[in-house]
Amino acid sequence: MVKLTIPAPELMYSGHSACPGCAPALAMRLMLKGLGPRTIVSVPACCWTVVATPYPTTALGVAMLDNPIESTGASISGLRAAADALGLTDVHILGFAGDGGTADIGLQALSGMLERRTNAIYAMYDNEAYMNTGVQRSGATPLGAWTTTTPVGDGARGKAEPKKDVMGIVLAHRPVYAATVNPSFPEDFVRKVEKAAALRGPRFFHIFTPCPPGWRYPSDQTIEIGRKATDCGIFPLYEVEEGRYHVTRKGGSLRPVTEYFQAQGRFSHLVPEDLARVQAQVNADWQRLLRLESGT
Amino acid sequence: MGATIEIRFHGRGGQGAVVASELLAQAAFLDGKRPQSFPFFGVERRGAPVTAYTRIDDHPLGIRTSITTPDIVVVLEPSLLRTQPVTDGLKEDGLLLVNTRNPAQELMIPVPARRAVVDANQIAVAHGLGSLTMPIVNTAVLGALVAASGVVSMTALDQAIEEFVPARQAENRAAAEDGYHAVRMVEANMPFTPPVPRAVGPTPQLPEGPMATLSSELIHTAAWRTLRPVVHLEHCTRCNFCWKFCPDDAFQFDEKGYPVVRYEYCKGCGICVVECPPRVIEMVEEV
Image 1 (cartoon, each protein chain N blue to C red):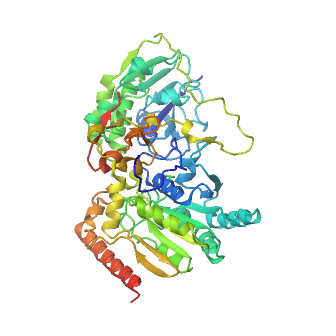
Image 2: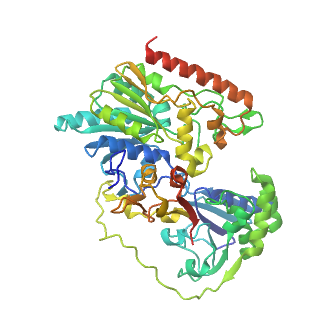
Image 3: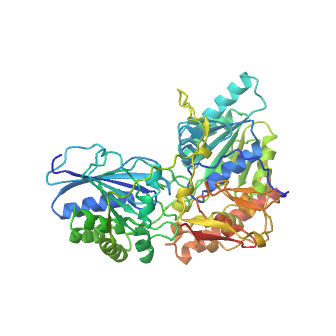
């Protein structure tokens, strides 16, 4: 038989309505492979609420609660309390929200869930804009990116502000476990989910999920762009367990960021000076992460 | 019905159906008419069914509702004929315009309306509009609509594209011109073969609450793709990268561990082709 590097059981079904080449679809598939069937998922308004539920069907082999965009954190606190009251203490509670529903609209509910020490997992799948409604900028949209609300032309040059540091916000709450994962590295992804599943208390995942229509690249490049994001240092893979940092992928020196930026239409207006500034920032962030890991 | 002409567009996200309805309204305005245009509010997904409406009148329109008894139905993607009720309410003396390359197969639709076809995918690809997997067909289809219906003048459509299409105006104008000449009327009384009902098991008993209880595997997403992956097994190393990276879980394995594509679910994204280490998967055109 085939030797598999990630678990075989599928808890996400085919026939869902994600776009071709959708990384958030892969993210859910991998997340449920790591958590297993004893899981309840809470999904707010975001791409996934549409992906999963062409009524009366569901694309998930586990129970799913559909909730308003601002309430993922609150909903998983409630689900946990209800599950515990019913004696279902072995059930994993997973909040699975987009970047808009996490970094912007659901931020207070996320903060509340972390502060209450809810025994649940919150995963933000980050496609770096409000994609379900047609590519409007979010707090997680990176500097310079084109979106429909940060246009390019007539003096406008994409988003003028840098990306919100959601991991930093989450880590300030001192969660039990927080990690960055990327569907381009499925073994690392599932290993971290399995590790988090064995812990108790508030846990957080930042999932990097490229979006072919929103980022303006061909659908077959999703994995390749995710790989470039990590290998260029745009999205480093690391985990923080009880405050201790561990970088889980260090491929020697970083690739130049131009490889990542040039692969996407949303950055096609950027000039070499822009990319040089991004490169300097990425280098500084990478050195900072390595210092956090070494504790110096 | 008065002088109002009602047109309903059906397409998939990314084909430009909403822009087509707007361009048609702009062209009608340039012709001196009083048009309106608006999309059905739905989800914005590449590949998902999209509906948009245009009304054209000589006088200002008071009505703001969606169109249920259209004079003209424009279908930008032929697979929608099988999966969406696109011809609902189409008037007996109306017009059905379909973008297809295979009219004999695609137009077995029991409507009395006149039918027109155009191969707008080929025109769009020839002018470099969109990609091979997702051609942007709206302007070619609008040219065909003008030829088949005369709802607006070609001069006005040409000017509307020049003024309101944000990019590649020259290519879009040329595509509209080609669509105008490529449209064909097809026989309304061609033999009708009832569609074969899809095997989905027993009729689902829907629960009363908003509870989804059926697997999404009832929904076949094959019609989303224009290219299909073919695995050349003689060079396959059984590394399972195709399975591992598939967002639609459209791969399974045979008893020897070789990949088998579940074509009823593959959306044709092409990730498996790019990620296959020995490069033994290729995309071939759907026929």
